[in-house]
Length: 66
Image (cartoon, one colour):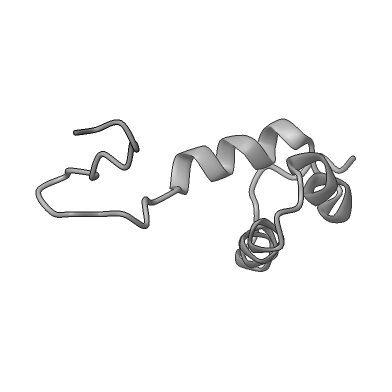
């Protein structure tokens, strides 16, 4: 593994593309020559919900909600 401290924009695009293909963090890390923990932390730090309702609320998508 390399000792680079930061991910490049190309690395972030590769992570996004790989996540859309449902690859694991370990697979993504191998392809980028990074640690899997670095990948998971990057994703956790920059993830956004697709189910944004407004005012910071995410809808309750539970089937037993009612």
